[in-house]
Image 1 (cartoon, rainbow, N blue to C red):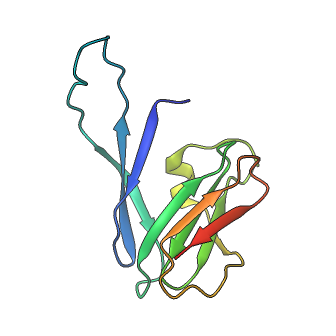
Image 2 (cartoon, helix red, strand yellow; image 1 turned 180 degrees about the vertical axis):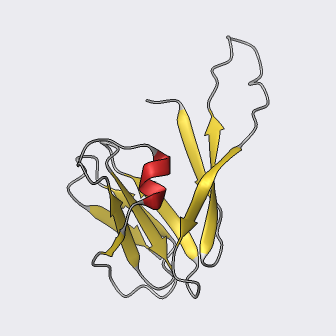
Length: 118
């Protein structure tokens, strides 16, 4: 576990991405307040609404779900990449079922496939 959580806002065309640091409070203590930090934007076609995203288990690709399709951004070296680099990587369309209310995407644990849901 990296201790990093990313939140993508549901926006048309360009969805802001925030990092929310995780913290582990001591036993009996409440978790401290944390501040989400804007790390970049996830740009898609202006007519598409970003509805979900998932980072691959090995950190070298990012799936982006929109109301119109599914896209994958890969590290050019196939090695793990920063979120910053993946947000700027070229976006390739990948197969997805016809789900008019497409709202979710997740890589399989081994990173060799993905599942979607509406």
